[in-house]
Image 1 (cartoon, rainbow, N blue to C red):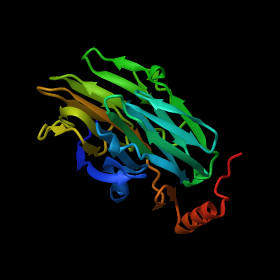
Image 2 (tube, rainbow, N blue to C red):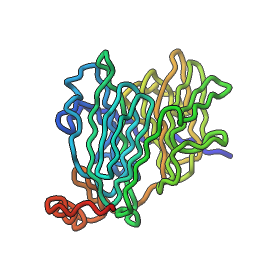
Image 3 (cartoon, one colour):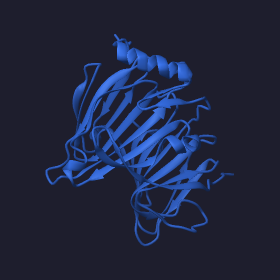
Image 4 (cartoon, one colour):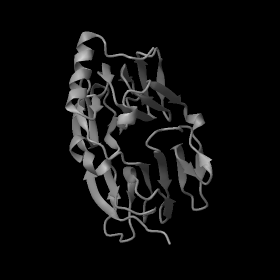
Length: 285
């Protein structure tokens, strides 16, 4: 017998400014972290005004986390201290494991008409892997399977397993699932999730009901955090919906977080920032 998850909390994304002056919407961050372990932050950068995003995210460090960038429209030019450089184009994903430390930059460029739209998710690393060797994965849109269910539901499978198809991102410590789901109007979507894992959905377009009660249709730029269970049921009425559906195994470890660095203790944070100032931050070969 399956246990369908109910809604624990609904968060509305809030305007914020990051990097060198990028205007974005933060779906969750530092203050909501206890509800979303092992995830730390989700930003939605979506604008048709280049002055909102062109200043970008110049060179900055990360340690102790993974940053996952998913571009819907436009492109992001990037470079890092591992020697990687290139472009994350529309439909592409960059899954970067900072581990012991990486310095990188991300510069959004947008489409010819000015539209830039993408997401950045931060996932925590456990204490055992905080200082792992950094790694970088660039996944092109053609490498991401798109599954079409009999109901008309479309799923872009970045990470996880749907109908015995596995996403291209594998071997991640927190065992995440990252789906981009489109549900047509008057349709129900049922999806198995791991019991005990943190599960949330972020609405990109349209509106949907995210539990069986159907008390409230939840629209774009809202985040749904689910209660416990091993299944989610999401349904639509007059209009369809598109949303990110993300889950992962909680770490249940202490979090010491300052800016782009997330460790387990204040002492580890202090060491990281001292190393950055001294020029001994990078440990990778």
